[in-house]
Length: 233
Image 1 (cartoon, one colour):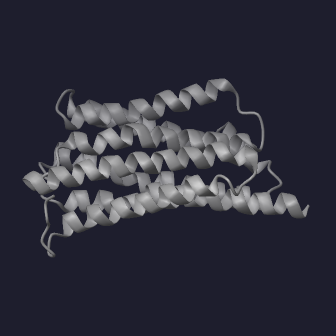
Image 2 (cartoon, helix red, strand yellow; image 1 turned 180 degrees about the vertical axis):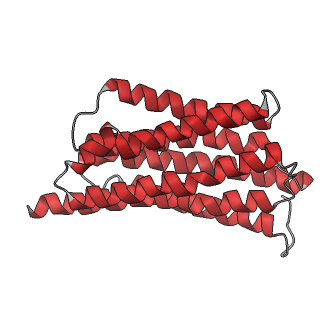
């Protein structure tokens, strides 16, 4: 097992993110048993997304320790699974307040997968970087459009549950602000000639606390608050 130096901030950030994701996974899987049955699926999906993050961060940390660099594929392997899972968790979150339809489910599943895949192709120089960046950006904006102006937003606004409306606000904010770090990193590596010497990896690891951990915690908190509200009604 490799031992990192105290001053190796990148390795420290990987270890911190790794432990945080392990703790989040355990909390979400246990927490799924505390909430009502209808909340188990979105909470469990977030737990799986966090667990996938554990494996991805562990592999990336090992790559960093071996060569002091992390090939782009190590980041995208985790995102390719966890981001679509989180978007689908949001779908089932909103679906508790009304009918959304199978069409929206498949659109979100396909678009979220393509968004990550196209960005990877651009950063891996397997596709024109400009075209990949623009397609990835359009796909992310489509997801935001569904969250802010589509059927999901309409369904949640019609909900009588304050915890659901408040939780949706924070989840949507995370997908808007927190996920912006990924196209920004994509832009830096693809167009500015930036070579990651650890700073970008640190940024991604910090972002994990918001994008994977806080996201899952927000869904669990909403589930518990809404379940309690239902019991007291």
